[in-house]
Every structure is written in structure tokens, then in C-alpha cells.
Image (cartoon, rainbow over all chains, first blue to last red):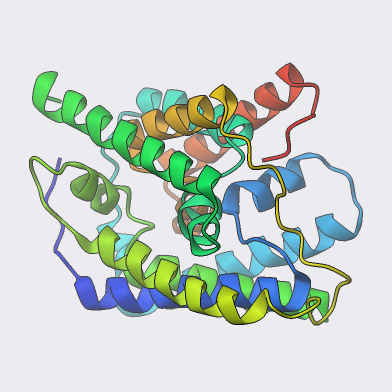
Length: 144
Length: 140
């Protein structure tokens, strides 16, 4: 584990931008902004109208990330807390979890809670609690 | 116009994830480590995103329909079942193991770290396994 700096103002600005992204997608296309749903939709390889907007969303997200990273040095600060093996196992578990739970941090955590969905509230409480316990066990019980 | 909407939304989403620092897995882990490293940035990201979206949705969802499509596609199910809770718990487990959730995972690909690719490939495998097991009845 390595320390990271507490950056509330960039955090708040970034959060508001994520909120605006969610608002625009709902205002224009009537869609919830859920990263796992948008990405998962591409994996169906059904090349329909939904495939097109999802692909455009992901490509623009990648361009924007590359551009804004030029200004805050985040590319150099990137640090992984897991071994490649743990990352692979964690990735598979995340994929299964977001599919059967119908969403992740963006779809449930932001969009679902923003429309007062009880399902999203339950999902958010569950994944926050489990992730906090998981990090506690890995860092403080197993001492990784 | 639907494509333009998706483009602008994607640009803003990527900007938000990058400016907030959430693409960095260590920053997320250092928040989830409530009993250790105390980087509470994620609270401000989630809080800012949630409040902004809440205000926007309040105004939007009163309208009869979106600007460029026929209806708002809001999940109608209210069911709180084992699938929802179990899926969220699995997601929390994987998120806690890595500090990576789907949005930042995909955005982080542009920096070219091998771990980012490992995660996204593994996540794709996970989604496809889950889809196969549920016969595609359950779109995430």
C-alpha cells in the first residue's frame, strides 16, 4: 500500500462532472449512466443502435481520460494495490457481480440513488460494506 | 443527436473520473481502508455526483420524454432479492480486492498498464460467464 493525497476539491469537481454526464445521457437519450451496463452491452456483439451509442460513449470516455490526464499527472500516479493474479480474480468477480446485481458504482451508486431507487440503495450499502471489509481483511488481518 | 449526446456524456464521464483521481486504484483502496489510510476523496466524488444527478433527475423525469428518444428507460423492477444483494456483494468483494470498478477500469486502459488490461479482460470474462449462466435473462 502507498499513501495518496486527500484531494477534496478535484474530487468534488470530478463528481459534479460525472453527475452532468449522467444528466445529459438521461436528458437526451433517456438512459441511466451505468459503466458496467454500457460496457457489458458492447460484449453482446449485437451491432444494433444501442451498440453504436455505447461504443461512442466508451471511445469519448477514453479520449477524455487521456486528455485530462495530461494536466494532473494521474498517469504517473497510477498504483495498483493487487498482484496481477489478484487483479485477474478480482476482475472476474466484479464482472459476475455487476451482471447479476445489475450495476456498479455509477449505475447504482450515483444514478440509482439519485432517483431514490430502493434496489440501488440496498446494492450500494452492500457493495460498500463488503468492499470495506475486504480491504480491512487484506490489509489489516492478512497484512498484505 | 443520440450519438452526440452519448459523445458529450462520455467526454464528461471520462473527465470526471480523471480529474477526481478515481482512475487510480490506490486512491480508491485508500478510501475503502477506513481503518488505515483515510483518503476520503471518494466521498466527495460520490457526493458531488449523487447530488448533481439528484437535482438533474428531479427536473428531467417530470418531462414526458427525453429529447431524442421516445421514453425514459428506467428499470421498473422493485424486487430486492438474493440476486441483487449477492451480485452487489460479489462486486464489493472484487472492488475491495483491487480498488477497481468498471468505469475507472475502462478509462484507465489509456495509460497502458498491464494490470488495467488484465482487469478489463477478466471483468469481460466474468460478465460473459454470468450471462451464460443466466441464459442472458439479466442485463447488467
